[in-house]
Image (tube, rainbow over all chains, first blue to last red; front, side):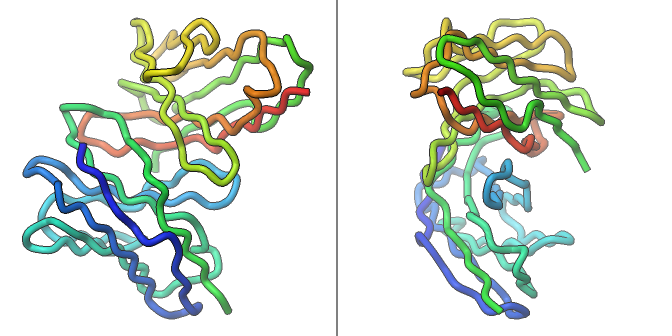
Length: 111
Length: 115
């Protein structure tokens, strides 16, 4: 599975959009981009995933560049409860079901 | 949404004790379950992959005799830490996969403290 690179930490004001970048320049054509987050002392929570097209659900939007070498997770209106470590992971479903977690981005939402 | 329950949430026991952690998928049948370990201020590390009715596949460096995994049904997997020692103290997290094109869903973890 391709490796990902994320900033170590980011801050965001409450109510503003949080844009979390992820670089996956070695991604292959059949690898999906998954985003999870982990709030302190809890298990990771699935947020969203995509292959090529931009995706949106009730939690977030995922913007994938045309060359698929990077993506951005957008939390449109961050709240204090969105403070967590966000993980960007690429994997191939049907090939391996494993998720290999990197170090993620620690997002701090402040009042 | 998919719910994965993990029990117990916290356990404290003496060195040499064996500890069993349960992972249940409450509203779906899980084709595969996974066990992770997380040390403070570190990321999750995959320990093993568990398929119902077959032996678990362990990641390199994980002792299979130390961490016994049983996947007896499509909704239950257990991790037993045998003869636990203080260095086994960690946050253990399971996840379950509904189908191969589905995301993994995680339990809330078990904090294991060995005195």
